[in-house]
Structure formats: structure tokens, C-alpha cells
Image (cartoon, rainbow, N blue to C red; front, top):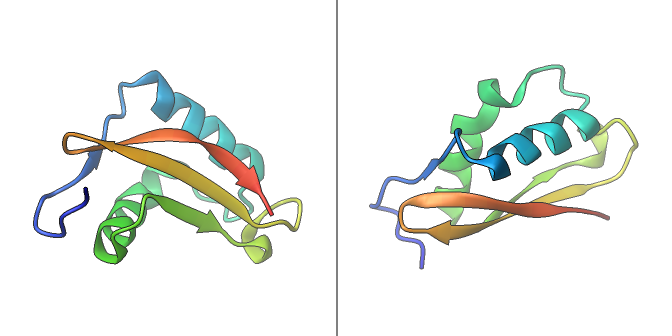
Length: 85
């Protein structure tokens, strides 16, 4: 369960993070690498108490919404995959 007062992180040394980087760069038209925006993503997910973020179609290379899903393991968000909508 997410708690706003518990600081959350993403383990950048995990293989799931590498997959997140690949998926993000594959679809993102933002022009910034993931490491430049990951802190903002983590803060937004924790603030809203959700385990996903959306790359909106206006900022994606293929013009589709991309949902990036995570699960909470201890104090870490663990990447689970991406869906297109």
C-alpha cells in the first residue's frame, strides 16, 4: 500500500529499470532521457497514490497514450510493463 509520507524510489540498478528506460525512449517524443524526468514521475505517482504514469499521445512518437505500470515492493516502485491506448 502506498503512503504519501514514505519516500519512494526506483532501483536504477534493477533489470526492470533498464526495460523502463527502453520502453520510455521507444515511445517518448519529449526529447529528454528518462533520468531527467524520473524524479518528477515518482513524486507525481506518490502524491496521487497511484502505481502508473501516462505518457500522453501528444508527447508520444506514435500518437497513442502509453501507460507505464509499477508495483510497490518495500519502498521501491518496480516496473511491470507498458500498455498502449
